[in-house]
Each structure stands twice: as structure tokens, then as C-alpha cells.
Image (cartoon, rainbow, N blue to C red):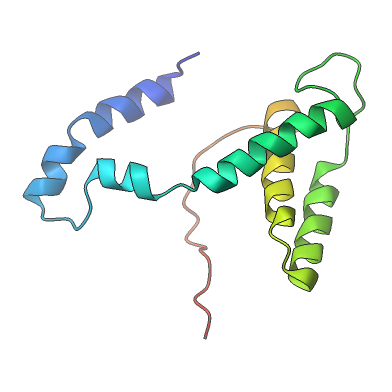
Length: 123
């Protein structure tokens, strides 16, 4: 279902290629769409989601248990910090996807924000 925000975003992006060229930005929108993604990561996510459907049930399946996904993401992040296994990153992404789709947080909502807090540069 297309939301009002989706329609506004599409309208705003419709002329961005022209503006990027005029303003001499380094990257074109199509280049960014091609470069800012990892097909390998996506494939690993999809493969693990399929296995997860057997273990935990399909997305939005009626009657399946609720899981503490925030705790699960924290656990996988700790394990990644300890052992460097990137499968934990795939698990975090999948757990986040499931929480996005099925989450039962009482204040669950989506509001795009830029809080000014970003990833720190390593020294």
C-alpha cells in the first residue's frame, strides 16, 4: 500500500537527478541505488528468514508466540563484538525486520527523524 509519505518522497525524488547534475554533486541517484546495498547480505538474510519460518513460524502467522526481539538483537550484537561472526549481523537485521513487521511494542510507530546522532569515526 502506498502511503502519503511514499508519494511525497517519490515526488521529491522525481527531479533530484537534474538537481544533482546542476549542483555538481559527486554521485548520481542511480549510482547510489546500485552501490549502497549488499546483494550478498540480502541473500543471507533471505536464506536465514526461510530457515526461520521453519523454526519460528512464517511472518504474520496466526497463533505463533511473541519473542523478545530487542533482547535477541542485543544478544547477537554482543556475540558479534566477541567473535566477529557476521552471521550475527544478518540475525540482527532479520530480527529487526520481524520486529518491524510483527512487533507488539505499545508505542510502535514509524517517524523518520535525524536526531543528529550518527556513527562515530574510529580513531
